[in-house]
Amino acid sequence: MTRVPYQYVVLRCVPRAEREEFVNVGIVLRSQAAEHLEAAFAVDAARVRALAPDLDLDELDAALQTVCDVASGREGGGRPRLGDDGRRFGWLSAPRSTVVRPGPVHSGLTDDPEAEVQRLLDRLVR
Image (cartoon, rainbow, N blue to C red; front, side, top):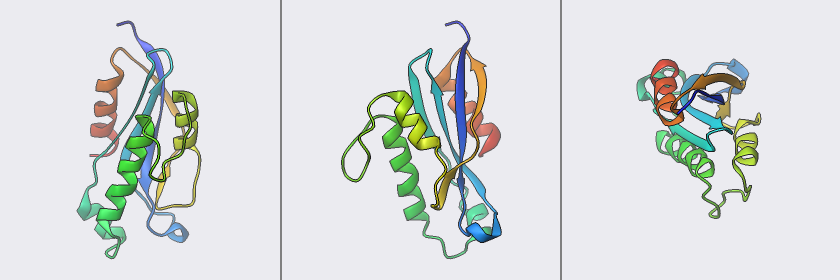
């Protein structure tokens, strides 16, 4: 595969917005050229607990799984009906006032979008 452009956001756990502290917990990557949209997460419980000892990690995992579901096109059960990858990425990368928030959109080039998700997860989250 030739190198294709992509955009991504880092998902952040922001337990207390007023403190403006966060822990990176996931990635959402979209490559229009490769017709690829994927989300993945890895929660470091110790890091999250350092910021928010009382945060329910099961609820955090459930919120992140919902992001993955939306990225893969699953609808219903409280998930939005958004249609194509572009609309889903737009929804996933939009600022929101929840514990799980996307950071700014960044871009890059890759020859393997699936592998790039894991590379970004290793580099920016784990």
